[in-house]
Length: 414
Image 1 (cartoon, rainbow, N blue to C red):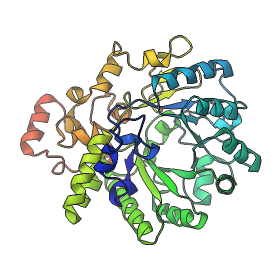
Image 2: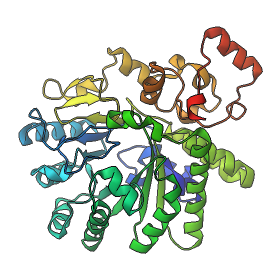
Image 3: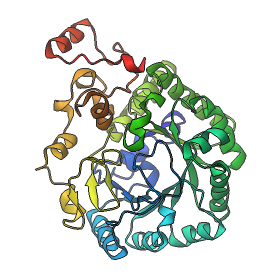
C-alpha cells in the first residue's frame, strides 16, 4: 500500500513517524504502514455470501454462505486471540460482510478488545439503518467498492443500479459521521475514467480512495486480459499522482493510496527526485519503513472457514485453521517453507526482482501474481512497469540472468 498523498503532499515525514517510536501500538492508524514492529493487519473474509456477482472477485463469492463459516462464538475466540497477539486492525470483508447478521455484534466486540475495525463492502446494502448500526458498532472506516462510472461499474458488479446504491450507501455513512472512502480496482474497462472518479469524490465529499492494481486470483484469474499493459499501468500511476497533487492545490485534502503494485512507490520516488531531491530523500526513507509487499508479514487473511492465508489473494494455500490452532500460533510459525520464505524472501527472488536495486522498498512485489503467470512464486512480478535501466539492470545483468535461466517473458503485457 503506497500512501500517495502522504508522500507527495508532505503529510507524513520520517520525523513524524519517529515521534511515536515507530511502534505499532502507539502509531495512529494513518502511519501504521511505517511501523518497525509490524504485526499483521487481519483481513477476515467472514462470509462467501454476496448479493452481487463481480467478475473480478478474488474470493469467488456466491449467493450462499459457506456451511463451514466461523460461528459467532468461534469468531469471538478468534478476535480475542488476534487482539492479544497485537494485530492493530481487523478488516471485515467477504463476500459481502453486510449479509452476515452478526457483523455489527462482532464489530462492536472487536472494538471492545482494542482492535481498529474496518468494513470492505460493495455499499449497496448500507441503508440509513445499516449506517447507524455501523456507527454504533464503532467501525472506524468503511471502504466502498466503485469500479468506474455507472455503466462500467454495474457491468462489473452484475447488477443494474449498483453504482447509485453504492453512492447512496456512502451518503448514508457520511450523514452518520462514519469515515468512508472508495476502493477502485484498475482494469482495461475503467482506467480512463479515473479523472471522473476524482470528480465524483469532490462532488460527494469523499475523503479517501484506494486504487487497487488487478491481482489474478479467484474470478480475477479469468480476466487477466483486463490487465493494463505495462505502459498503461505506468501512465495510470502517473495520472493518479498528478490528480492527487491537483486535488490538494484545489483545497481538497483527500487521502489517496495505490495498492498491490509496489513499483508505484519506486516510480513516485523517481518522479519526486527530479523535482524535489530533499523531499525525495524523505520519501525513500518512508518507503523503506513501509517495507514493500508484506504478504506473510504485516498483511494476513483468514477466510470464512478459518483458514489462514498469506494475503487475501493467495487463497489456494493455507498455513492452518483458527478452529484448530490459534492465529497467534500459526502466523509466527516458520516451519512452513512458504511462510519462512515470505518473511525473508529476498534470497529466493528470481529474474529482475532478484537483482533490482529497489528491492528494499518493494520487497519483490506480489508473489501470487508471479505464481499465476509463471507458475513460480519467486519469479518476477509481471506487473512491474519499471524499466531495466531504472532498476539497475544493464547488459551484464541481463547476460547473468540468461545464464541462470531467469529471463522471463513480459511481452504478454506490452
